[in-house]
Length: 269
Ligand SMILES: [Zn+2]
Image 1 (cartoon, rainbow, N blue to C red):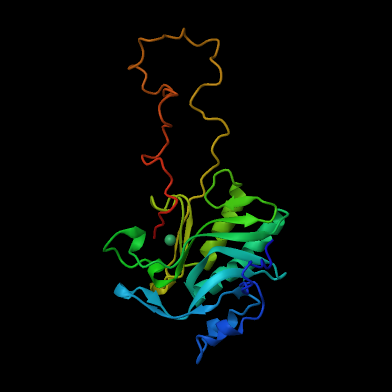
Image 2: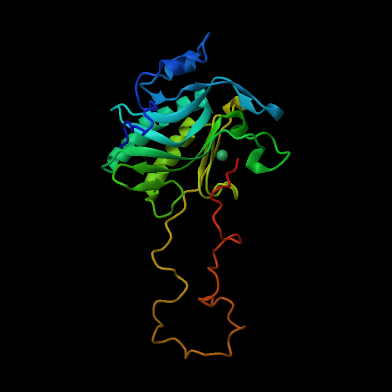
């Protein structure tokens, strides 16, 4: 639980309650969202509007640094996320209302949200020329995991995390966000969940996240034991004749993706 780390330079941290300097910047008219996203809800100072090329950017932007739980504990957003106020507010509400009780059901509290990507001026899935991603409109957040005070990390796409728990999160986000993309949606979201508030006709929503079954604890490639009634094993000459046989253990895992290095810095949609 991080409540207020005090940096060596003595500068006030986001966790400190009163930040009049931050409030002064956006000045004249604060949006209803801005007024509602108080420091009781989130540490989310306003930042200047961004008007970038190709429609990138937005107004009423905030830097979401932490969500303040009802019990006043902070969930640090790491790194802080640049978001439209409405999206920041939706994230804060999600963490406060759904994720915090989920962590409590596991006997702990949430301390960190692992932000994989927020504002970034680019096309969908980083495809040049593709329609502007909601990330380019500061209307999207890619979440990889939550960290708990007990040291445990809940990776939302990790098959070893209880299926019930992942399904609970799935139902939670699909009820709250108009776009949810996770594993199974395309090749770009196997290691994180994309959330955004894209507005569509008739409130059309996209909820594409397949909660995969856990992997078996032991790789199933080799039969456990050869049955007594099995015919004598033919060695050497049946290589080509048995395509269904277990792969050579020296070969790469049959399930492995062509690209083996995890795209830890590539983020999509
Ligand atoms: Zn995304």
